[in-house]
Length: 231
Image 1: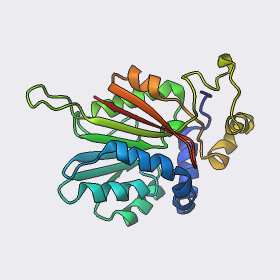
Image 2: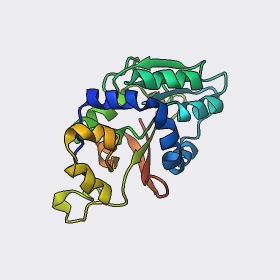
Image 3: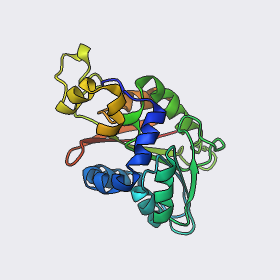
């Protein structure tokens, strides 16, 4: 997995700038991964769901339909204009500007946490702390009630391979996207690539303390991995 490039503030500026185009551009590329992720999420009416990095609200709108009026749906994003677009998609939603590394919620607040195409922006050294923060806000398992812990569903831009696929030490060839990403000046990465590079997040999910971790690779559009886990 190659290293992320581009600072968080630069990424937020880029996504603010392209907020009016992002939904149209991403909808087709991300469709296969998102559809499969929603199948794996198995959202139930009445659940408490947090979406981290709502973007332009395309997934948020679908989550709202699945939850119905009895559920609680909360969304966060770092880019104010993305939040504004999402508010138009889901007027009844609860949205807040927040850094995913410091979520403004109490422990065990949610039954499900969804994040799509976020981890491919995150530096490797921040992935485990980020995922520990995700785990913190998920419901704890209860032996008394016989319920499992809260569920995590991640959909990431990825590649088909082992945990070291594409790294220089692995001996595997980089994808064309990875080669171009590495050669592009850092200042341009947020604007030409949206900051995205293929990631393999399963080892980080395990390192953050999640259980029942599963990974599925989906090709078509943007090659993606769907990772599901429980607290």
